[in-house]
Image (cartoon, rainbow over all chains, first blue to last red; front, side, top):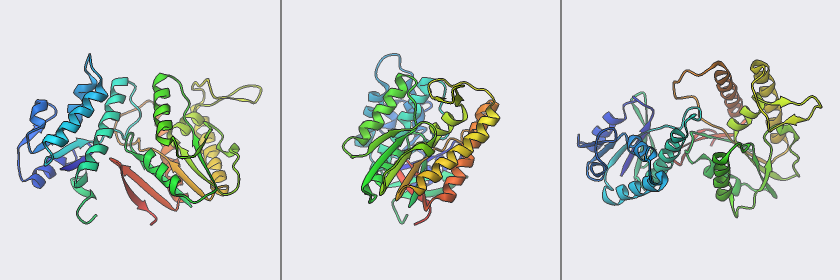
Length: 133
Length: 189
């Protein structure tokens, strides 16, 4: 498993495609949860997590955890792309705060499970874990 | 030895900072908490942090303002968490007429004076801690990267915290940034 994080519009997906040598992408903005358990690249992971934060019923934290653990179990070779969300002022809306928290925690868990972790800034990947750091 | 640990919200910086305090060699270990509990969500956050620290034998000192008043015995290691709360508490503080500070009631008055006074008070407090500890670990926050346009008082708060972070890095022996639970050394060994 590989994890790529970074701010919006930094070139994370382009890097993921080069790393995975594939364009088989599950997009958190538009694709199903099942797609995230099958495809080679999972893009916009934070948008998948946002769906759990806007549920009317159910526990967002538990649902997010379940989704992430299932992904680790069933799609352990995936390249996962996620925006860093926690780098601004604390949001005024509580579901946004929860979203930031759950996304951050999910990335920590995925980083633990990944053999490589990168952060992309200005299109430049910085290796945080794996290879020769 | 002074170490600064920065990172985004939910980056894993608290857990890393606590590991540093656990490893530090000192007779006495203190956790200085700067957060004020305003509501249930704050309480939950505080409880989560307390759970993280449970069993680690740190003595907690609650000091939302006036760091320079923290009293520490010799041979102490301190973890100060965190600068974003301390900066907000200081910039928005209200001093009651009888000279006692009010930590319960905050409202914006003259924020520009608050900002100048806040920076001086916080730096004075940090120097006091550095002088009176064998190990000082300071947790601060990356809140500068969302590109939003904020009202003037928030911009002044961001400027205060940004300036403090630069001063902190200047004072420190090591600076780490934690990303997804992974610490990266930005300077020092």
